[in-house]
Image (cartoon, rainbow, N blue to C red):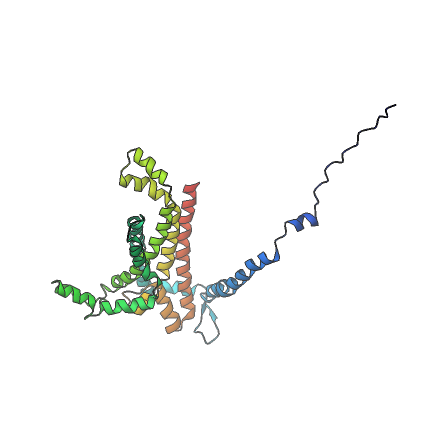
Length: 311
């Protein structure tokens, strides 16, 4: 006689453990936390904390020796009547436009010319990038010798029959700032070129082939394919150029020290001379705050607009 047995009941799947076990499964390894926290701690001690102190000193009158005297916004109010500050602000804007605009255009042009893999193109890339690895002070000393009254530039002008253009380039108020911009550009163009070369390498060649099929010319391909694809690179280049423009100091200080008669004075050089030569550390900190606000404002506004266009 067959014996009927009830089928075994399969136990339902055990629920996932909650509470401490679930949280423990997602816990970050201590080594990963160490790699994150140690650089953050170092950054806080060497960057964030001094920056906060700079904001605090901007509200004080301090010579670096005696106790700081709180003056509130007095340092910023003084800037409204400071003629040297106004001159430095105008020169900084002019430096930003000329140095930034020319370095972006020349860097992009060099990248477009040297993006194709041809014989000898590596030599030209290296030649344009070589000034980037030079010290800014060494670069300034070389160009100081070039700009001397009996230097290379005036001798070349004399040899080609342009003796009337011989000039004391760094000693003239009308040419000092523009003469200083040239070595800064000489060093910056290679770096911008490398950034644009990386962006051009990331563009899909299929886009250019499709544009050719549609009858687009070289200028149309550059305008409708290359420029839109370089939007993210443009944001990086703009940020780098603005930061480098506002903190440009080495070349200017080595060549002219902001002279003659403040004709090549930038906010960075004026901040340095005010803080460490005139020992007005509070006013110098206020100038540093102005430089920070200018850089942050321009970069933030561009990034916000870029993100809106991307959405």
